[in-house]
Structure formats: structure tokens, C-alpha cells
Length: 291
Length: 314
Picture 1 (cartoon, rainbow over the protein chains, first blue to last red):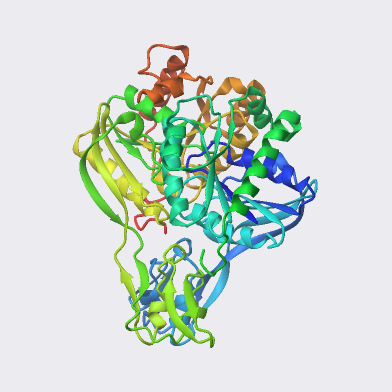
Picture 2 (cartoon, rainbow over the protein chains, first blue to last red):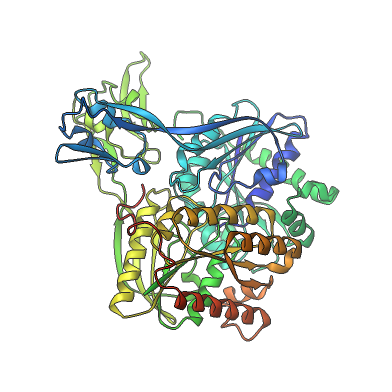
């Protein structure tokens, strides 16, 4: 089962929930993987402190033109939707940062003058943390596109067992790439106007993807009732409320797991995991080739 | 006319809350909310929209079922797993569809389809707005959910904000940036005069500060840092100060954690408008330092890129 932890707004507590939930589940005898899909700013490793056993660079294919063979016909530029390969006065120029790796120019070239070469976009690291499987990606600085690296991170997660997917903030393409294919989405929010605003966007996104979801309200006593009222109006289940807790904040700042704070905190994640499993088993899971 | 962009690397450090205060404190400026995925600045500034425009990001591809001959030639061509086949009991393809969420509109299927059955449809990916607020003009946007091309929309918002500032002869564009370091952040910072990184004293934010600073350095842009919620962990605040001095990034502010930020937010106010408080004073001092730096340097803070990426990032 894949559980994605997302939010919309940054800083609501996704990684806190994701890392602690993953570690908690792995201690119940299940085979669990934690996958940090926030490849732009990965933080899960700070808390889980994994032993990294495998590291590989991740590349996407970009075009390299053999100028000897090139006839300057411009077919490559015609097919490219991103202006990553252009033909000016029968000379071909490539802009690799714009390339999506679709392979179109290579196929379209009538004289076979284009071949694909790898362009490094980041690294993938895999390992374990106290029995919990761990994988994350780190996007190279200056690299604009996160989704190809996110795809690689997700591909590294075995299909057996449970996977906790730590999703980046926002609602656009890196988030979609991370959330796609999840069996359940946990949306972490805070009861503030910013939190509610971004939660609504995240709910819209999750509904657009057709995925079942529920809510965790973090720092639940810092704002007002509007998030709860919204959840009630929309019939969205609140699986857990975590009050603003100085001990959690301090542990977080030091890179420590909430689970290490004691039984009361472990109990929170026991409750959360029970409720998630309840939710997932209550629903009919539709098998199919869609998202 | 100068540009200041506020980023963080890590989400939730307080960028938007600070930008709202800067909006109240800065005199001659245009605001730009470039967090187009999850914009929040309007919740404090209550803009009244003057102009609204549609943003056409990527077009999407759809299958014209009347033309499609279900040959399946497209299936192996799609690298984004966006082409779906429905097969009958005999295994033959009954229908081909494109999943709009996975489709990156690369057009390879369209190019090679023997029946010319793949069609581009115009796609309203979002909207952008030029508005007025109690603190001056603001350009902001709303990217459609599950849409791509936030980088392009960010580029539009920035360009409009600059144009507005030039027309109105205003001195500054203040940009509320998105979290992360990917394409929308890159589109937010290229060609700016100064980047302010808002961080907090946590190990997570500390690591992301280094990544965000490295990104700005990659584009040759001067960075300054503000440590928000600085009293949550004085040790890490001190480490951040040390790192900044080694990295050549001035610290322009250290602001204590204060629930007044949330109280003010609930009243649709920035903290400097929510009465007098020591925290508000710390924010004012931060702004004063920023304004000084922006006034000072001339030509020193420009990136080494010859202008922005006008084509934007996909």
C-alpha cells in the first residue's frame, strides 16, 4: 500500500508525519519503505539518518547532433514543443535545460544525425534506517525539472509492502508526480488562513487525481475553527490532530524523531496508522491502468 | 528600479508573512506573488483585481476518436506513460486515450500518428491578475491544479510587475517566491538584484538554506538572510550566523517566534499593522537593512545571466 503525505502549504509537518509514521509502521513487523520525493529540498534523511547502501546519478536523455550528418532540414525543431532544439539558418542549436527527454527529435531526424546522451539532473540514494527502507533524490542545484528524478525515486520503491511517500509542497507537477499512484493521501494542514487556503488547493488536486484522502491538522490550537468547519462541510475525515507542542518543535529543530519523545507521541502515530488502514480497507480499491 | 526576491528553500519559514510586512513598510514598489502553485499573499493584502488574463501553459493532446484507427503505434512512443489503451476480450485495442495529467504535450505521438488523430487542445492553465491593494499595486496568479509550467507563469508575473513599476515610476519590485529550488524558484530569481532567504533555526531549514543560497550563487545573485523564529533554537541560530558570515551572506534580520504573526494573519493584517510589538520592530529593522542594501549597490547585485529566461521553464 502506498500512502502519500502531502499538503499544499509548506512547513505544515509533512516530513514530521511521514518519517514518524514510516518508522512506526516498520516496527510493527511490516516491510516499509520511506520515499522522500521532495527532491528539491529533501529533509527526511535528517530525521531517519539512513545508512546509504546505494547511490547513483540520475540522468535524462537529451539530444546530441552529429554536425557531419546534419542536413539542416529542421525536422527536429519542428517536432520539439519546448524550443530545446532549434534550427537557424540550417544550423541546429540545443538548449538542454529546456529538454523534456521525449525523444522526438531523435526519431524525427530523417538522416539519423541525432543521438541521445545522458544529462545528469541529480542523485538517488537508497539505504535503510533501523529496518525501514529509505530512498530519496537530490536535484542538482540549478536544475529546473524535478519530475524525472521523482519518477526514479518512486521506481526504487518495491511494490510489496508499504510505502510512505513524502511529497513536496505545492500543487503542480512535482507534487502530481509524487502523489500519482498512491492508495491513500494524507493531507497535513494547520488551522490558519494560509493553511486553509492551500489545503483547499490540495484537496482540489487530490480529487482531480481521484484518490481517497484524509486530513491531519498539525499545531491544531494555533489558529481558529475554519479548517475544521471546511472539513465538515466537505465531508473530509480528520484522522489526527496534533496540538502545538514545544517538545515536538524542539525535537524537530534538532533533527530528532517525535517517536523518541515517548509513549504519548508513539500513541499518536499508532492511532494515525490504525485510522489509515481502516480508511483504506473500508473502501473498494479499484484496480486498473489509470493513475 | 530594483528587484528583491524572497525565497527559503524550505517551506513554512515565513516568506509570505514577511513580504506582507515589507509591503506595508516599503514606499515605492510593486508586489509580485510568484508562489503561483499555492499563493497566499492576497489573503493579507486583499487585492481588488484591475486586470485578469488567461494563462495558456502547455496545450494538451487528446485523441480524436473519429480519426483514430487504434493501430497502437503511439503506445511505445510515449515516454510519460500517458497513452492508455482499452482492449477487448480478444486483446485487440478498442480505444486509445491520453491521460491529461501524465501528458507533457511533447507531441511525439501526434507527429507519428498515421491517422493524424492526435489533436492539440487549447488549455487554460491558470490566470494572472494585476490588482490594487492598500499598499500599492500587486501582480499575482493562480495556476490551475495539476498544471505544469509554473515557471512560465512565474515569468509572466515578474515581467508584468516590472512593467507596472516602470510605468508608474516605482523604485522596487518585491517578489514573494515559492518554496524549493526548482523551476518556479529559478524563474523567480533570474536577473534579480537581491535574494533574501528566510530561514529558521532547524536542521531542515539549515540544509535547505544552503541549497537555496547555492542556487542564487549559481546564478551569480547576491544573497542576504533573515532568521525567523530565531529563539526556537539559539544554538542553530548561531550556527546559521556563522555559516552566513563564511558564505558572505549578510544577516539582515533575526525575528523571534511570535504567535502574533498568526493573529495578524487571521485579521488579514501583516504583523507591522497589528499594533506595536517587539517582533514588529524586529521586522521593521529587517526592512530598514534591506532597503539600505538595495539603495547601495549599483551593478554589483545583477546576475551573470543576460536577462531572464524569456522562454521560461517547462
